[in-house]
Every structure is written in structure tokens, then in C-alpha cells.
Image (cartoon, rainbow, N blue to C red; front, side, top):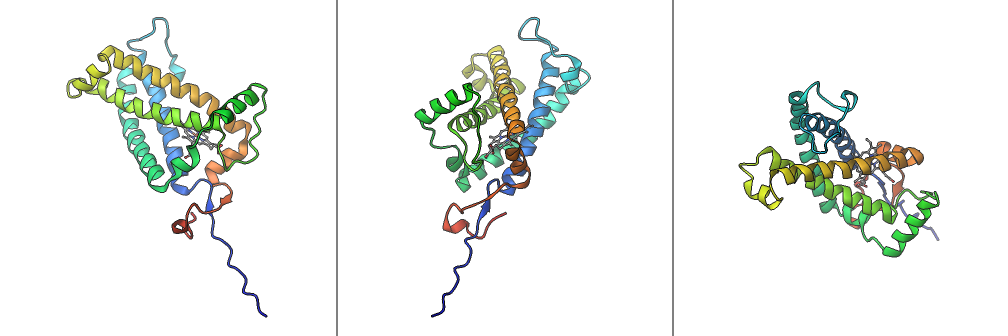
Length: 220
Ligand code: HEM
């Protein structure tokens, strides 16, 4: 009796090429937006006494920072849109970021407070990671919306009033930046603490089972 060997199941990478490319474009665009934003802010501060030294600012003076900000804005917005469309269409966002269970969230927070940040299986995000990624995605969208309001307050006057006026929109834009910078500090620290996650975001990471039949054979 002859046994026909079953062909190996095709797999895909943990982080497909489009996700990696979009992630690193986003990281570069965000850094440009944050540091040029600090340059613009410094010209007319929101919190008295809070300045950013030249070392942290992109652009010699506010007008230059503004140019950087406008250039980075296109990369951030178009790349962010592409990431969202890809994430929804491929099912990746739902697969990687949902569901978030309350019990797992509490456990992970307690473990982290005890400095237990094991990340043995890098193919699944823990509840805290999922929540942080969702928060930062919403913060990114909010930055584009509040940014539009303060960039073109006349054309988007309806949006400006919805946000509570020009100064309120500016403050919200600043608060969104603070959320993203807070995320980045934790995010980069964790990536450096667990370098295999960093390498996976560069090289693609381990091969994992296909999501559905239709995806088989499309491993990148
Ligand atoms: C420049 C420094 C950055 C580094 C070193 C970095 C590193 C990483 C790494 C290693 C992962 C995979 C995490 C894992 O597998 O456990 C990841 C995922 C992710 N990062 Fe970053 N990142 C950076 C910047 C950013 C920025 C600026 C944002 C957004 C504001 C961001 C948002 C995300 C999101 C949403 C994911 C999940 C992506 C997905 O699986 O679809 N990252 N990052």
C-alpha cells in the first residue's frame, strides 16, 4: 500500500511585508511629526514654562518646523489610511487586537507591576499590548482630525466648533501628542527588552498558520 505524503501546509509570516513597511514608515513619520510639532509649539507655548530645547526640535525655527510638519503629515495620513484599509480588509486588525478580556488585562497588569514581562510567544499580543495598540491607533486618527481643524480653521469651522474652539482643538492636538509619546516610550522600551519582537518587525518573524483557505499560498 502506498501512502501519498501530505503536502506541507503553506504558511504566512507573523508580520507580512506590507505591515512591516507601513510600520516603519509610520515610525519615521511620527518622529518627524512629534519633533517638528515641538518646534511649532515652542513659538507659542500652551503650558507656560514648558519649552523643548533645540536638541528635540526638528527645524531651526518655527517656519522650518512647520514645513517638516506639513511634509510628514502626508506620509502619516496616507500610510495610516493604508494600514487601516489593509488591517480591516485582511482581517489582521481583528485577529491581532481583539478580543480583549478583562481578566487577562488585570493579570497582565499585575504581572507587569511585578516586572514579569515574559513574551515567550511573540505570535500573540497580550491584553495590555492590544489595548495600547488600539489606543495609539485612535490617538493617531485624533491627531489627523484635530490637526485638520487647526490647519484650516476657516474651511473646517464646523469641526473647530465641535472640538470646542480653536484653542481647545490646539490643546487636544497637544494632548494627543502626549498620549503618543507616552506610548512610544513604553513601546520602544519593550521592543528593546524583547529584541526578538524587534527583529520580527524587521524580517517578518516566524511562519504561522494561514488565516483562511483563501490566503494559503500568499505567504510574503
Ligand atoms: C521608532 C520606534 C518603534 C519601534 C522600535 C517599534 C517596534 C515595534 C515592534 C517590535 C512591534 C511588534 C511588537 C510585538 O510583536 O510584540 C511593533 C508593533 C506595532 N507598533 Fe511599533 N515601533 C516603533 C514605533 C511605533 C509608532 C510611532 C507607532 C504608532 C504611533 C507604533 C505602533 C505599533 C503598532 C500599532 C503595532 C502593532 C502592529 C500590528 O501588529 O499590526 N510603533 N512595533
